[in-house]
Length: 160
Image: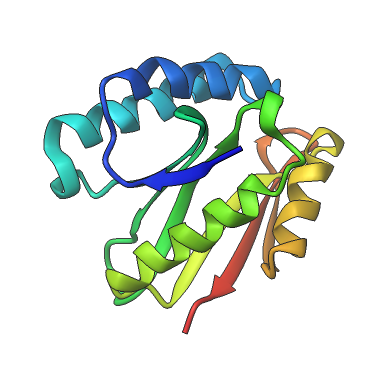
């Protein structure tokens, strides 16, 4: 198994990001479409879109990706918009390796704090545990954010 990384999206990523997001059974249809739209924006406008990517490939197949970018009105904070590993590749350590490459890329752009958000529903317990194990700190909870009983959890990781 050869794991490689690339930072430039290609046209095939539009469909592959959709497939990866759907495979997880975590995202609503409208969320999947947003993930796809960001890749489309990245392809159309490049780095000027504000969206940056790292794609993890195993033997030439895209298995996971991250999308991140600078938060306007801050000096050095970045959002981790998406971090998705295709269900067929979960539990193999790819996500943590992908994060390491994502951090390195973000630091090149001046990032000192990266922010990840997720749902507080029980279905997202594995995601919450992943962020904690990756060294994130739960900074805030906004109760009933996504829906009644569906809190928004905001995690941060300092990169400086």
